[in-house]
Amino acid sequence: MIPTKRIKFQDLQAVNGRFEPQLSQRILEVVHSGQYVVGEQIRQFENEFSAFIGTSHTIGLSNGTNALELILRAYLEMGRIQKNDEILLPANTFIATFLAIVNQGLVPVPIDPEIPSFLPTAGALEKKITSKTKAMVMVHLYGRTAYSKGIASLLESQGMLLIEDNAQAVGSRFERRKTGNLGHAAAHSFFPTKNLGALGDAGAVTTNDPELASIIRALRHYGRTGKHCYTYAGTNYRMAEIQAAALRVKLPYLDQDNIRRMALANNYLSNISHPDILLPTPENQDFHHTWHLFTVLTKKRKLLASYLDQQGIETAVHYATPPHRQLALRKGMSPGALPVTEKIHRETLSLPLYPTLSDDNIRHIITSINNW
Image 1 (cartoon, rainbow, N blue to C red):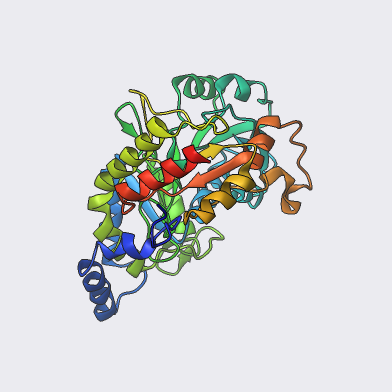
Image 2 (cartoon, helix red, strand yellow):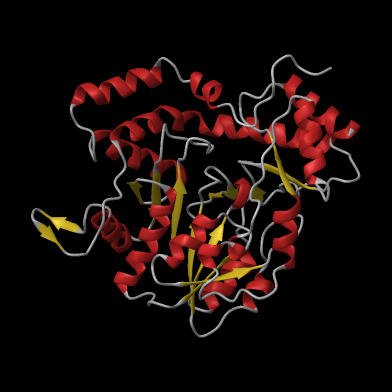
């Protein structure tokens, strides 16, 4: 039986409605305070988010892409990397990861991942390392922990930086440590659809490196290091007070929401049994995923998406065209053959998964897929 209401791919109205009236009250406090940029809400959020991730420093920023850009820019200022150095990253990530690298005058080197983990291996990374390779941007894609001891050991042996793109995985863990506290620095996104979503664009950097944190704090505010003193040619990547206020309301509930996401994902994993659908690998005792997205692979993506739409179920594609095939990135990059990435982008389909999705809706989605 098809539900009378369509099952949205993402229902932000329902997700955010759970935080009322506290959310509106906190926003009104900001409005009445007269302090709208880099004020008390941001300072409090930075402290609370550092405690959540387990790092010494959080720097609130305007969005996740800016966060990754400022990490790279700060390492350029510190002399840890130079213009035209190579940065490893998974080939199947969102284009924003590539753009952050390119926009700092660095060269992205995409690595083909494995299926069904959607993540690259240490062996695949090692084959791409040259004398110009200075860092890896490790993307915890779809909320899946991408860290491994093999990758960490390889990077350390080569003297390379490990930078995390934690835009989709806030709250994920490797063993007992949270993503965002596994490498030298991490970029976070709080775009409204994320597991911890603001009411607009927002992001952050987390790190245990005081020098890096100090430079990023300066860079986000025009390069300012003191009153009327501008040490760096910085920019304006500051987080808004209202966004920090909203994030402070929602952060205490993040673990609870992630547990709900895990339950929904496990329901999918245990009960979807269609022979034409490949499911992602589940988590294990070392890898704790937070399932920002639940993606499946099927060679009949258009047919499945159309069928589910007829059943009142919205789906999405993340992402239709791989970054290395985007016109913006074709110049100056020779990625070589990336057959697994091509397959993923050709066949991936994302199913609804968010904390307010009901058990009845999940059952309808599973039954519909199995009857396809």
